[in-house]
Structure formats: C-alpha cells, structure tokens
Image (cartoon, rainbow, N blue to C red; front, side):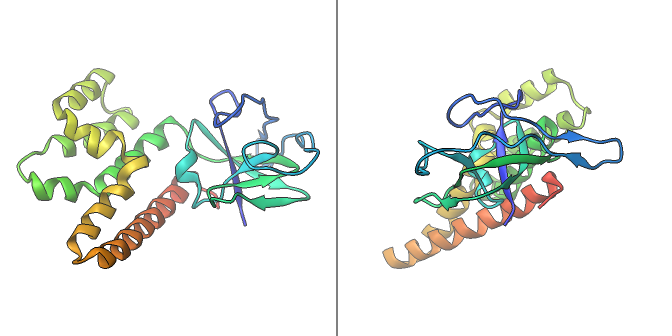
Length: 215
C-alpha cells in the first residue's frame, strides 16, 4: 500500500497543525534521497489527536493542497474510523510527486469536464462553463493571462463556479445526483447514489495518479 502526505507550499502540515516536515531531496540522476524520519509518536495512536496522518491514492481527493509526497512508515499503522486516512507512529517522506499549481489546475479542469454534461444537459446553449474550463487549461499551460482567466471566470458566473471552481471537491456529488434521480424509488436512488459516487471517485483517483506520476 502506497501512502501519501499532503503539505502546504512550505512543506508544513496543512490539514491540522503547522508541523515543518523533513523533505526529500531530488538527485541529479532523478532519484530521491528521503527526508529524515520524523520524531516517533509516543502513546496510543488516536486519529486527529496523536499520530501522523497519511492517505492512500483513493483518499487523497479529500486532502489536496499545494504539495504531495510519497511517505514511508515504520511500526504501528492504523486506519481512521471513518476510512478517510491512516494514522502512523513513525514516518518519513521519500519522494515528491509531480503535483504542483499547474497539475492541480489541469486536474480540476479534467474533473469539471468529466461531469460538464450534467450542466449542458439542462443548459445546452450555455457554453460559458466549457469556455472557462478551456481557459483554465490554457492558463495552466502558460497560454492565457490571468486577466483572460479572470474574465472567463466572471463571464461564466455561477455556472463556472459549479462546473470548474469546485470540481475537485464536488464533481462526484454532481454525478451522484444525476444517477440517483434517474432511478425510480428510494431504495433504487440510494443504490444509484452510492454506485455513482464510487464510480466518480474511482475515475478521479485514476486521473490524479496520472498527474502524480507515481503510485
């Protein structure tokens, strides 16, 4: 099982606390020298209270931030009760993924486009969200200015916010609603909702892995 640690741009914890982590170093040949082992946690591991929090690829969607590292653990490791992370006693970071501002923007655009049909199904003539997504991709690749990106964002208004701005966090929910309400009856809707959520999360995780360039 590969585990990841999400940190802010400065290499500090960002989902609770502000611990400075020992970061890995990339060598001239492309290999990595791991960071130092972080201080071993004493006492009982308790999620959100005592331990280093890590995530699998499938869990990363809920924790995205500026930088993502591959982590190595030693000793005790437990899964959180809600299944959204793991808690470790001893950790070091062994490599940094290819995740950065550019790949984050491209990933969000991909997620938005993947469920854009939901919006365009109801508003087929409104191309503003699609244009906003295209402009976001151009900006990520240095082919559009910040002014152009801002203009596309405001032109799309609420639609852009729905389809692009909140893509990484809410794309799955959009797919869920479409599938759930297409089914007949409460039980069928619940089953469709769960299936759609799982399918969208799986798609997002697979796409995220491509941007991270590691597993």
